Image (tube, rainbow, N blue to C red):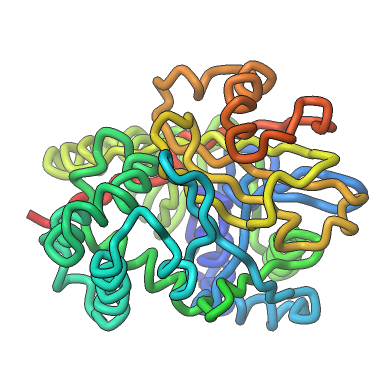
Length: 387
């Protein structure tokens, strides 16, 4: 008899885990609290195609996803696009950034500081085991290897953007992972990033079809309330039913998990889960008649600007795929208690517009066709250094 396994959450972690288990002859049921699969990669309809609610691309190092794309015969849909990156500096304005040449032209740093910055990135790429730097915060390691000015000018604004008040607590291993992930896609001209024509929804649907075809049950709109022991295994209690399984795989955030598994957790486990904090994210999609800049990705180094990044999707994918509309994402990590997290999309856009006009003074409200906003409560765990 096949072992019965329940997976909580139908994001890509849950879906890909279910695929692997089914291929190894397990009986799988997935529980999902919303009305569709895909998690943070969910899409909206636009102009007879789909667009991710939150900007999305893959790197050359994303072998698992690339292999899955090949397996589902979607490789002809995978485009590798040259993209340009920029950095917005409070004093100096908008700079091309991300290549050795653009680094040399970056005025706020001296030549020696630029050299230290470049060497530090090389050092990070050479480190093979993140545990060697896990007892440093990113702030400590960068200051030691690059100096105060490089940290203050480049890295601190980005850490604040991502983690806010926890910026000086973040493990260097987190930054190591980010840099190594991106480095596989770096070229002398910028980055070469992967995107699926028609959005990543086509991969999500293929994965869902595979699971259903192989007798995986996907229970949508069925939120798991509690998991507890039974004589033979575990009971999963949902809004709609109770069911017994041999094993449970959980993909939800600790805030949710600690309540679901309350009866099974030790006091120490509960305390550990309670300590884990997350930043939330609010992503704005702007559908515009006009492009904002020629860059795909802009990191914001000016803390007076109330968002952290601008990702112009149609500087990676051809805007002809979207009825010649420019698709611009405004990325903003924050906490769910923040005022901007709870503003409606029109008021939020009104707050953002003056700062968008600092970057492009010709960008006006009349250029905007429509706005959409999407929130994720558990967007990024706060990874602290190992004590």
